[in-house]
Image 1 (tube, one colour):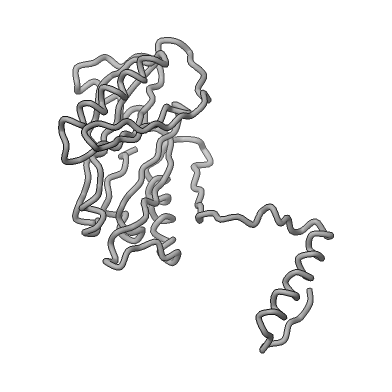
Image 2 (cartoon, one colour):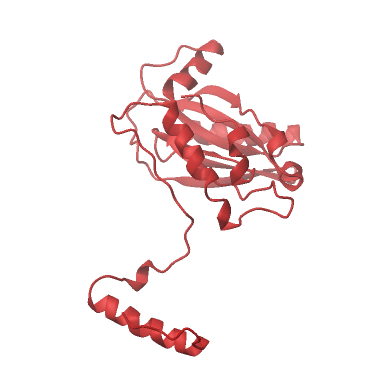
Length: 225
């Protein structure tokens, strides 16, 4: 590669970068289409394919290692919603279903992450009704709702002031619907507030996100298995 002078100008740097880029393209070592905005991503897996709490903990450790990206508010505690995606812990949610008095079906359940207006209870009920209507419309059945525990001690003042009410809706299908069905995200409005929900793209994974800064995610609630 071309060696550049220590005290080069900005224009000299750009010209040298372009020359080097052309050489890398000809050598098949660089593709300009790879130049796009992207967040840092970590991947942790158990090679034996078995669910293990240690995999989740390693994922949290990886998330805590991205503090250097600077996605933290001036209060030092409000983050940008970074989180982890993990396999749906079927046993965890089926235990919750059983505690509500339902008998879990002998098939996988899906979980929808729902963000509701936190301070408007009437709007919450309207949004839940809209979400349930849409779920029934695509052929799923509903076990019920689960309120997600939130530890407000680890989030900043700004995040706490604007955080939504987070609930999970547990659903299943008696029919073998396509597990890779098209994803659709919708916004439902009620009483001047809105809630976002996503039609499940897969019944195998879910996302857990935190409004806390990455370094504080050890104090957040994550699935136990």
